[in-house]
Image 1 (cartoon, rainbow, N blue to C red):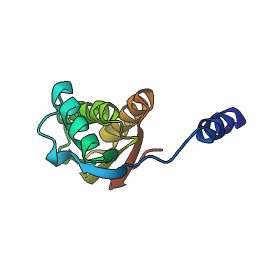
Image 2: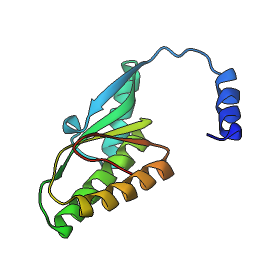
Image 3: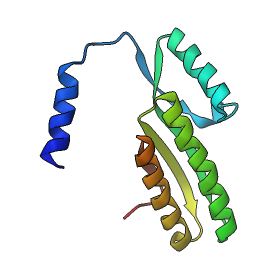
Image 4: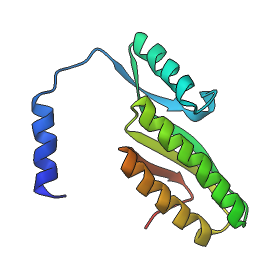
Length: 132
């Protein structure tokens, strides 16, 4: 980690004050949609109740040895990266229970991690998938 990054974090934390909100881990299965209008309403409702999404959890399915299926799933996960960023969640936890073709899935997940970083979201993986 660079000292500049560490310094920036410390400087940002120096101005922090406690907030009366409870961080929550939100399961993507409870989302009716990843459309901005829905997410905006959900974020407002959670805020009114004193909750702030900290992590969005989504299950990934890479159980087919098919490039098109892998791309469809990566596109779906990219929607959840955007949803996490929109909700203000700093982390997207992708749960992968089965990987049929590691050589197809790893590049897709690496691209997803890059997109998450661009959106200010940390991508974490649970289960069978790994990122080098």
